Amino acid sequence: MAENARDHRDTQGGQGRSEYHGVPANALPLTASEDRQWATMAHFGGILGCVPALLIYLIFRDRGPFTAQESKEALNFSLPPTIAAVVANILVFVPVVGNIFAVIATLIWIALTCFSVAAGIHVNKGQPHRYQYNLRWIK
Image (tube, rainbow, N blue to C red; front, side):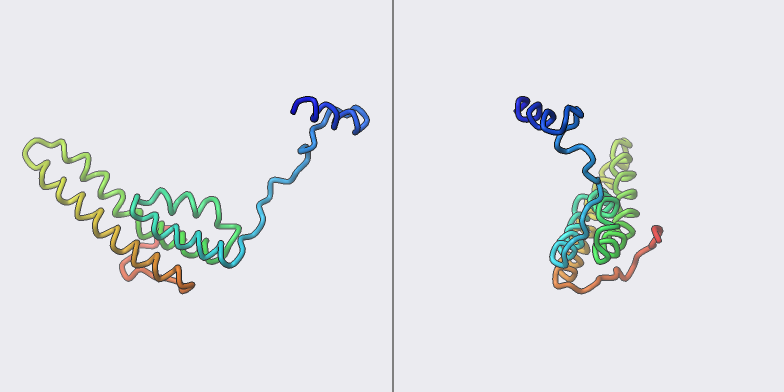
């Protein structure tokens, strides 16, 4: 493999560049089906909290309008429950009331999972989804 790269450099007049030098880093726009797929995954990612929606929003927001809209909606919806669940999981270690916070954290996760799956199914049909109760911190 190193010999192939060396041979390629030699054919360029000894400039010492590999065949991948100068390739632009711009990503191609998403196709309609990929756009819908990533938008759906942003909502289904709510099962794991706000991190999947955040990653999809940051990576794909400039590549597909439907993904940008739906990942932002999923991120806005999943961020407050994720923060509340993390706080509840930390408070689990409080000796007297720890069990109550364990139940609260579990209920938050169950509710977030149900709403995220329902939204993901809706978005997979190609229809935009708006959560009824959403703070929409990210504009």
